[in-house]
Length: 336
Image 1 (cartoon, one colour):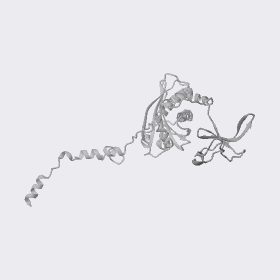
Image 2 (cartoon, helix red, strand yellow; image 1 turned 60 degrees about the horizontal axis):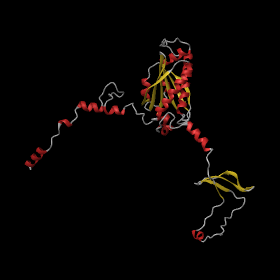
Image 3 (cartoon, helix red, strand yellow; image 1 turned 90 degrees about the horizontal axis):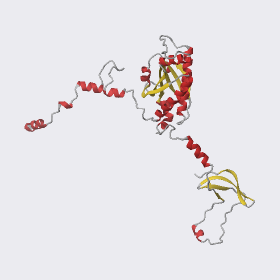
Image 4 (cartoon, one colour; image 1 turned 30 degrees about the vertical axis):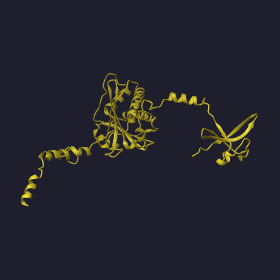
């Protein structure tokens, strides 16, 4: 027995050292204590995946088209608003946590809370100080070719807040129009905040979509962020998942109007049903020329007019001169 045990122990495979994780590999996988994480751990390995703030926005492809439409409309409305040459570009569309977005804001900045009336939820527009001073400088007659003067360390004045509010209301109006081909929604201005803590419209861990816009007016300009939580877009999520090609979302108003006009010139065959009754096949086989089929219909009973198999209208039958006519009374009830 002792010889057999020694033989089995000799034949047992030895575990290779290359298959065992060392302490550095374990720390890299699970995360090691440090100063970067809020819970005392570095954001590495599995913990980095769990705490990741990046969420793919590709599941709502229609937003790209909405933002493209918004940029073109904003360029026109802001050009009329400032009476200056305005260029707008979309820097990026990102998905992140709401708390991560608030931490990324560079103060001082103006935060405008707006509400989507039909969706009963809120969104956020942030305007950095460069754009605030540029708008004020352009609207109050600042010189061309000189950068807007920035005065740090003081709160925004009432005139500056009112001018920025007018610009934000234009942006919200264009945003509502950009969503019109998808769904009717009205974005309304709610309030203006300078402290991010007072502009908390969602839980810090909720996912939001941030569209970063760059607005240039010759040598002046700044950045504007349009932040919409996923919860706000949830009522129209199915519509935003659709894939439309073209700027008109698959619609052509010229063709639609032409089709409507041509429909009025279309000839349609309509049949009048006096009465319907059930007859056995055996009785039909006995029919001969001159046989009578009693319908049991009264002269005042209504008849139904159909197009194909679709009931259209009902009325009463009469005679006018040498023609049999039908006086329309009401729409017919559709089957099923």
